[in-house]
Length: 285
Image (cartoon, rainbow, N blue to C red; front, side, top):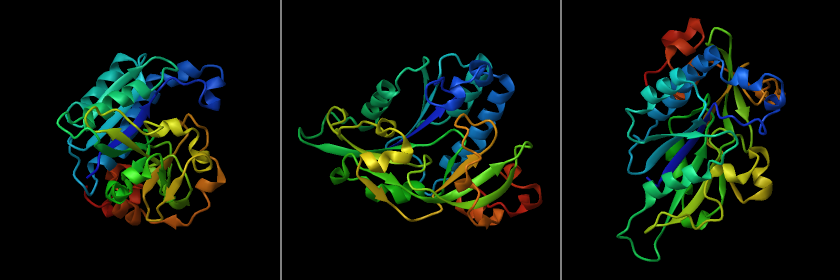
C-alpha cells in the first residue's frame, strides 16, 4: 500500500471557519462537557470504527491517523481521546492553539512516515492525505480503492468519491435513517495526492496536505480532480451538534432511503448506533 495519512479535526477552535463560530457563546458550546462526551463517542463508534474495519489492515509502515484538537480541550476530554488513540501504533494526536495552522504538524507526520535516508537522491514517494470529519466514516474498501490513484504522475491532484451514504442521527444517539448521497467533492474522504522526496520526507508537491486545497465544495474548480464513481465510499453523519450547520441542506435528504442492513455491509458501525429494530442485522466488524 502507498502511504496514506487521514486527518481528523476534533473540536478545533476555529471561529473563522464556520458560521456558528461567529455566534455568541461559541466557546462555551464548543467546550460543553456533555457535547464533548457525545463527540468523543461518535468519533470512536463511527470514525475510528470505520478505520479499524478497513479491508486492508492498517499498518504503521504506510498509514497514519492524525487527530488535530484544541490545546484548550478539557482534561477529561483529552484523557478520553488519549485512551482511544494510545493503543494504535499508527495514530498521532496534536494540540493546536486557536486558529493555529495544521501544516507544521502534518509535515512532521509526513516526514515520519516517508523518510528513507538510504533512498536514491532523485527518488520521490507519492502519498495521500485524506480529509475526514470526527463524526464521518469511510467504507470498508475505501483505502483499497484510493491506493491506485496514489501515483507520482497524479501530483497535486485531488480524488473525490461522490457516492456515499447520509446518516441522520437522532437525539438518542442512534441513526434514525440512512439514504443514498451523491455529492461531488464531499468533505468525507476527499483526498490530495502529494509527492515527497524519499530521503528527507519533505513534500515536493505544491500542496502538502488536503486542507490546503481550500473549501472542499470548490476544490475541483481550483485543482485537477479525479472522480472515482465506486461506492458507497463514505458515511456523512448529520446531527444537531455539527459546527458547519449544514445538516438541513436538501442534498442530504433527497436520496433513496437505505435499509440498515445495506449500510452494515458497506461500513463498520456498532449495533447500538443502528435503529433499534435493526440491531440484529448489523454485520460484524
